Image (cartoon, rainbow, N blue to C red; front, side, top):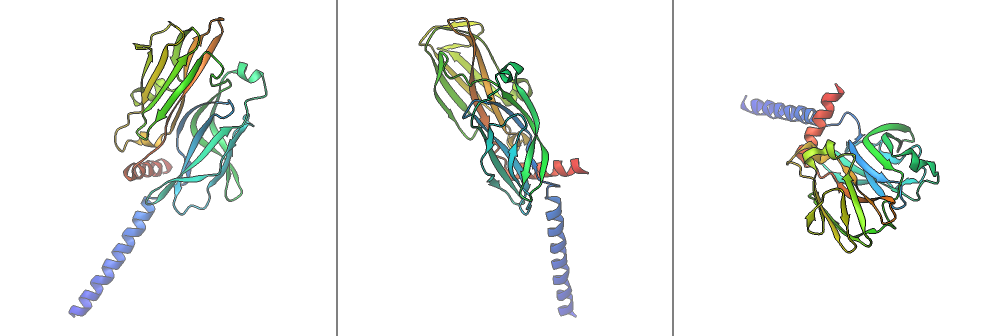
Length: 275
């Protein structure tokens, strides 16, 4: 009798464990693979680049192979690579880069191009449209060749970025902006200095004056903001000696470094949205 009791107890435990594992596996799966919601500013200048991040279940076989965007024939993507691995999901990365600027002189006059979805070539041979968040492509040079030149730049995994510039000829600084400053709010902070003075506009800047920028993306632990990649091209607008209006773009980026807890919350949110 006792042997039978212990035997049935083991069977019940095995069945309960099996049922729990099935439930855990199902409730921790994404309904489908998808791109994260990005905020991207980029220039179509040759050499400028950005990254797209795609999340999928570990056993998903249908994955993005490459991406294209209508109206940007010079945009190319390197092969998809695994960026981070979690218990039930993988985060993939695609790096896009511009081989050449636009050959159409009217494109700059047309202003920035705003993109919310891309054409995705998948590993099963299919082609689909996928949302990526918001991407703004500036049809202009990053600022090379002007009287302001970048002398150094650095970044860290905690989202802190620094950049310094040298002013080779006198300029008048007129403004400092990004399309995403309002949207990011307190999730992006910066300090901009002309020499030792905090930046004010307009401001005449003499040749030899250093320009320094320190920026950060403060994000609380396990926040879903860890899963929102940000690529910014901060725009320092100025006028040179000849009265020509120019823009010096300053790259600032926040790459996703989510914890396992943040991934679990993301999966739960996606499952709720799919119901």
